[in-house]
Structures are given as C-alpha cells and as structure tokens.
Length: 318
Image (cartoon, rainbow, N blue to C red; front, side):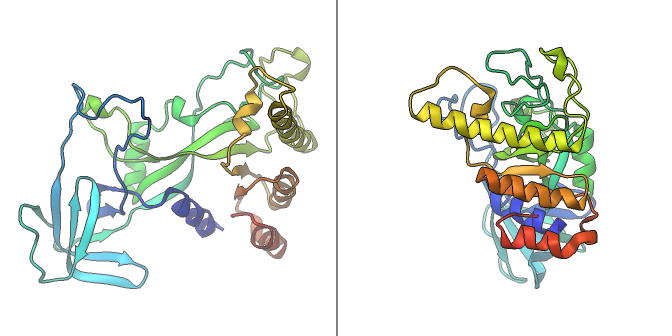
C-alpha cells in the first residue's frame, strides 16, 4: 500500500533535486531548484537574491542509480541544482567541477514522504463565499500556512527523505496539499522556504467526525459527529461543486464560492480511518467522477482483496 502511494507521488512530482548530507551522502534526482513559474514574479537577478550556479562532482562513492543498478566508485555530477549525470569508476571528472571525495559513502535518490500533516493556513469561515460548514475549506492551500518547521525538515532528512507531500491536518475538506523540498534553507533570507515541486498535489478530504466549532451557523458547529454524517457531507459538497460548475458554465450563477477551488484536475487525497473507509472513498470518488488517492489506515490487510479490487480495478491509487 505504502509503495503505491509513494509511486503516485513520484510520478506526480517527477523527480526531485538537491543535495543533503546526513552522515552518508543523499543525492536527490533531477529537477530544477527554485524555478519560478509565475510570469508576474520579479526577475531572478533582483536585489537580495543569491544566484549561484554550483558545479559539483561527488567522487568515489557507491552510487545507487536505480533498482538493481549500482556503480561502485562512481561519480555524480551536479550543475546548478540538477543531477547532470553519473560516471563510471575511472572516468575523468569534468573540468571545473568542485570535487568532493565521498569514498566509503553511499549516494542514492532521496525518498519522498507522501503524507506529512502540518498546520493549515488560517481560512476565514465567515469570509466571502465561505461554505456553511466550518470543516469544508477547499479554498485553503497548505502553501499559505507555516509548513514544516526546520526541526521537522531536519528529522526527515536524517531519515533519508528529500521531499514531502505536506497536508493540512484538520477538517473534512482540508484544502490543497503540496510536494515541497526538505532542503535546509539556512540563513539565506532570499530563500525563506524550500522549492515547491508540485503545488496542488491533491484536494485533501477526510472522514473526520469532530465537527469544526466556531461556525457562522451555530446549529452546525458539531456536524458531522458520525461517519454517516461525514460521508453525507463529502458527497453533498462534491455534488454542489459539480452543480455550481455547470451553472457557471451556463452563465446562470456568479460570485465567489469556496466550492470553486474544487474545479481543478487535482485528485482527491482521501484520508481514511479503517479498511472499510477505503471502499467508501472509492465509491464517493467514482460518483463525483474524480481521480483519487487514499492515505490508508494500516488495517487494509483485513479486507485486502476488496481493497485491492477497489484501488486496482477502478482507477484509484493506494
């Protein structure tokens, strides 16, 4: 189950880049670091931003290139935050590279933690277009919150992780998750947070039954307080989002709504509490015509055949 979750995010993110030293060498795969997609963003050479193209060769380590492929005494070449290549033992180091001797160490692609809960952003439950339920906050984006602390990043790096899918921790519709770098930004104020590898990696939905509290409608402060209520709320919210989308397209409705945030191709990241909720999550996603991923409970072995059928045969990712 965990491997399938990891596999999904590996495909979703592509590959990651960076270099983390954790007693042995951890080398993350290829992708641009700090790339800015926003065309309205200031140019990269703005005052206060350090632009440094580093050209580094990690020489002499045991390089784990991929499953079943190991290069003893190999060299990993990195340029400008990208893995440029892996050289066999004895191949000359490219001229101009900063050489780092890593003999006796292992160089391998870092892991991606597919699910790390963090505090979400503060979302006004009484703001324009807010949902009537205080636990339905699809407009929230985890990137607007505090994210991972440096202590958390350091602990994950120490375990061999180089990136993580961070997820808001409270609510039924919790908002959007994102895959971020775990690199140590240190004291560089021009890089106050790590690179974002995949924004909006999923819409996080949980079968939470604690209620929200503080609602603008006191009657609903403790809703949902049962699994049946959580299922009803999830289904109704997805149906309402589809209905609003159709009316917007037909010019029959306007204004602002929290439901508009669900009108994206991002999959539903369904957080379940037991093996039966996996089956329910699949049915809900199919009813809504949405792609879905499930963060399992660890008890899926109790209904392994049914869970495997739900995930494998009906388009889910576990």
